[in-house]
Length: 226
Image (cartoon, rainbow, N blue to C red; front, top):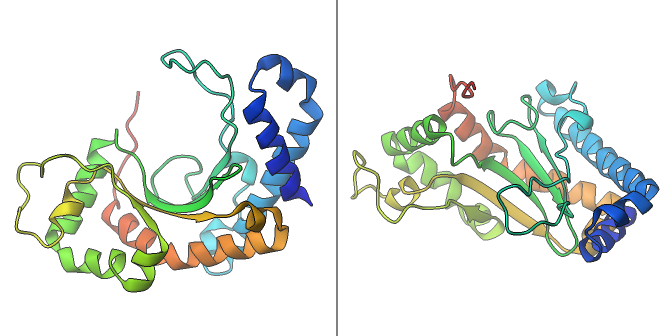
């Protein structure tokens, strides 16, 4: 079962997070990474049935490295014991928003929406869209089936930014720097290859309208250039 290989490897990496341990377990790392890429490629195939623009994506271009940048962190652990990928036409880039897969023991989840707090133009575009028609946004995120299912990730500011109506019914969402959702899965679900893939697809289908709303708001956004 490939997914069990992933979880077992990541659990051991969490307990032995060092360059020496990783060097001694190169084969296990490769097997676990391949299992994750297989899972992501399967999700791409499933999603492409209703979103053909995703059909040509290669999981290798969507997956994030597990190596950590420790230069500015007190935690000098060299690896992040998590496999992650963003299924989007722009690959790992946050815009257009897509579907996020994160696998780690005890914390795996499917995600969607915009998580790019440092991209001020993207934040402004989404805020402006919500402000222009608050009810359209609320109808999505506060629909009973959606709100009960997903954990909302917003990174809200303490105060509403200037220029936005404090009386807006979506005022709390206008404070946000991100508009993302997560649905977490137990290890037992992730360990079952078929059950995991079904659960991810079902979760992605439930957040599709949310993603579409954000991508419409972000139409014309250009990633910052260095």
